[in-house]
Image 1 (cartoon, rainbow, N blue to C red):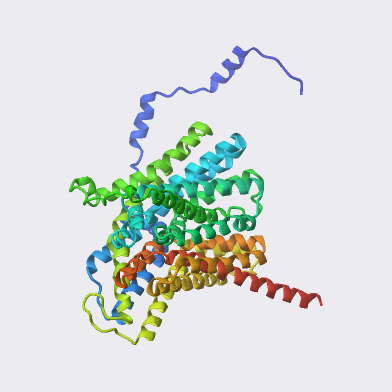
Image 2 (tube, one colour; image 1 turned 90 degrees about the vertical axis):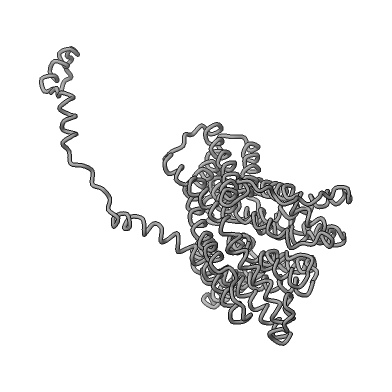
Length: 566
């Protein structure tokens, strides 16, 4: 068909023949006559919101309710005591459940998309030094936002200034130093984790480089009278940092970096950062403690008096203010990096605002319920547990059971708390599904769950034994991690990533305050120097159990393969 040229004016005249003009007032009249938008009935809201809320609420119910019931039933049956302030404790537990549900959903909707987006685009647009600087700031800001960090403050009241003065100082006047040491350690760990992803370094080598000096520093600190009581706090801080804020945000950045560097084909490519984030704070806390104790007694500060009775220190204003202080700096960091460095606008602003609002509200509710619910429940159990094998610390009533049986009941209770808390941990269930898919069913989800749970349970029992019998924590740590390093040498890289990261995943926002409160109560009842160390043993336990289980599965799998090929 030959082309034909026509004048543009002729074209406009032709198309105007079919053009129809409509009066604007007619459009407004038609809009006015449209039927009104149907209103949502109560049953419609129920059908829309119930499936959305029930799934998220069920996760937190499975994590909190079984543990709370275990503590209540144990006190009623084994200790023959009733729960004090029942109404307050129940309301606190409900606040923890709802707060965790809001907080986790808020982090998922409001913060994690930013972290993954920054991790994906920053390596290709920015110099590696900028990525490392961002990783340092992200790790530090995420530490301040961790809900379990507030549990450290509850431990200060049960510590004697005469027997452990510097431990009391770190949890009192120097509390900011302690948090900054932990935040710096997490920031350095995240930076090293990004370097590992960028250059493909093996976690096994990093573990063999970092853990032995950390153990040597611990052994040296144990020989110093001023530093020895701080060892438990330092190793417990390593467990506290790997919580529901740090783990998902750091893994989201790690997944983005792995994808941008072409390493996303390995499902475990983001693993390993959690391990580093649980080791570096130990060194940070011991280093800060070494510096402070070197200043001598002149650096000891007077313990702060009771806070002034103003509205900022009263509930719920204190919890709301604390939630804003924790979330806002982390949020500003992610937003500024995306807008100023990456020059990418915020998409789906309503979803972003929804996520941030839920995160702040959830943390405020969690803080409200933490002290009134979980910490109170754990301390009541911890104070009463020694009554099974020794006279009651307050009334002088004789022990409920013979000494050996009472000790057995106490250790079984600690094992059950650790085991049950681990089985209910949502993050561990998600990790189990990933591992089962990665290993083509060789390492099943159920095997991983029980392997980690047994390790945590044994660690909790060993940590309680350490408090009851005043065992040297440094020796238990050296023995446990030496065994873990030996199994690490024999294991393949994928199993090492899984085992060492599982130790961080198990210490969630429910397990940490509960076990810490249990340790504080036990330490107060048996007049121990402190109640720290349970979380430290709960971290090394799953490393050993998962590595041993993985080696056993590898040996069994190789044996089956040889029989088939023979």
